[in-house]
Image (cartoon, rainbow, N blue to C red):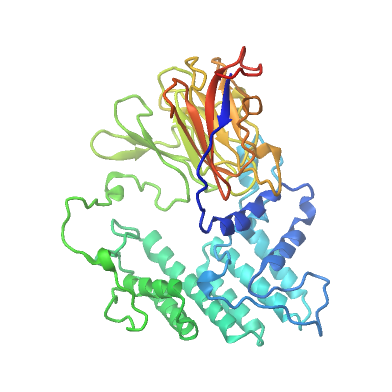
Length: 504
């Protein structure tokens, strides 16, 4: 087995990632030992971290207590998860069978609605004078409605939050106007860019064919953003959203008030360019399913006919991965079901290689990123159909990951695998340590990361292999969120795959 050693690297500033690591890293702690108490603890977590109201915990002194400080910074400077994703995670159900993709799917489906139902019940039980907590709960319910795509209802929930506490300062109330504007703008996006997607949708600057036909969402957004900017004219982020709202209606720049207009700069250039690329995804069949959720993309010849096909995992818990076969005439056909991918849900990324040396490209699907450890899927390519061989290969151990890479690190002719885990030192979970899987050559793998010294114990988000020093041995680079990256130098073989390695 090769020994890999950390090399010296520059310390690169990671602007803004600290906030993301705080907001999302906390969610990784909820590999829950007491799921029955999860809803109450989720509500407490939301209340504790609300920068809008700093409401007291349940049971804390309420009437007559000193009012906590309220974050009055501009909307664009406040960390509030209006997508509802971080809150929805906390209402995920326990996975009763870690090896079962059906049970993994069941743990996620409906978690937003479960959260809304719980918070609405909590709201009904509040004392009438606990306006601060009511404001917080309305905000969180609104964010969960955004997560569910019910933007009209989300806007109404944000309006209730705005009205729940008459003692809110004008600046805080203005921030909620901006939030209502975001909900309205997202409604317009769903009704137009998603439901009525065309070749120009969501490509900046917006062409005439990308203008919204259903205009109510953008109209409402303009009202909210304009009202907000009367109070907070210094907020450049909301000024930008206001300009975008006008663009979606075809009213930029003529109808934009001069005191808030932002110039397009270099994007204003018009005319044909030999470098301009046209979005032809719909024409060639790449949008066979319509809208889809986040996921990676692999482009390679998966069926051995000499043509490039497309494989796309998805974080959708109710739809499997997408496999588009290249017809050879400039178009693609969806053969996902025939390829055996119906059950392959909830994967944010995938990497491919011929791990069994049969001449066909196999695929590893990664799960659990930003959330909880979940099992991966190793798909063995059977020539047009994929077989899930994860358990037989020894790769079924749950891990939260979206980054992995294949390489033959020991030069034995079989590609090995490194999987970067999202290990949070503040809430350590050994399942999220990085893994180096040695390919035994018989279709099975063994994790040798600890012996090789590459467990990483950081929040791994990127993996790359390469022989940076031309010594004939692949070296390993791991990018970490909010922490320095690591470059592991491959120093050669030990006496056996499981023995302590020798230094090269």
